[in-house]
Length: 289
Image (spheres, rainbow, N blue to C red):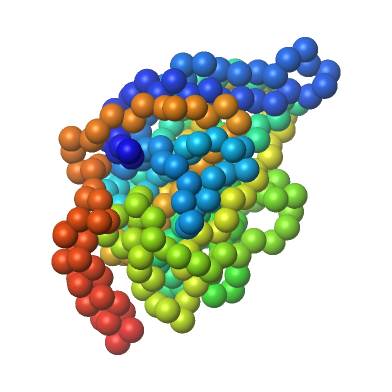
C-alpha cells in the first residue's frame, strides 16, 4: 500500500547511510530520521515503469507534482519559453539534521519520471542544505522534462536557468560517473503521477523514466546538514512529473495517510477516466497553440 503525507513532520524510521572512506573507523549512519513533507510523497515498491533501485530495497521514496502545493522550490528560474511563476506547484521532503565529516561520501539514487514534455517545463532537484542557515551546501541532482527531445533530461540545465546569476550553476555531485543521461522512453503508468499516469502530452516527444541515476558527493568539510528532494511543475499544472529516490539503508518508513490536498486518487479509480478526458482536451489545446 502507498501513502501520501502533507505539510507535517513525520517520524519515518529511515536509516540514512553515509559511506565513510577507509580512513574512518566505520560508516556514518542515522536511525530514526524524521522527515518534513510538503505536498505529496511516500514510499512505493518497484514496478515495470520504475524498477527496484540498485540498492535492492523493497520500497523507495518519491515526491510528485500530483497533489503538490506552491512555493516549495528553492530555485527561481527564468520565465522564458512556457515556464512561469504561477505554475510552480510541487512537493518536497526534508530530512532532519545529521552530521558529516570531511571526506565522507554521500551515495544516492534518483529516477525522474515525467508525462510532460518539451516547452512545458517540469523539473526536479536534490540538494544538501547547511543546517541552521537554510543555504545550499551542494547540488546533488537536477532534471528537467522540457529538454527531453534533445536528450538532456538530467541534469537538464536547470541550474543555468536561475534568475540570480550569482548562484552556483553546476552540480556538486557526480552523476553516473559523468555519463550523459536522456529519457529511457517507456511507460508513464505509475501511481505517483496521479491522473496523468499512463499519458504523455505529446507522443512525438519522449516521456517516461530516466532510469536510476547514481549521485555521489564527497563532503569538503565537517558540519551539520539536511537533505532535500523535490519536484515542481513549471510550465503548467496539467501533466505531472515525479522523482523517485533511494539510498542504502532506506527501510520501511511510515508516511501517514494525508487528510489534505496532498492526497490524490488512485489511477485505477473512475475519477481517472473522467480526468483523463480533461487531459486529452488539454493535449489538443496545446497542439493547436
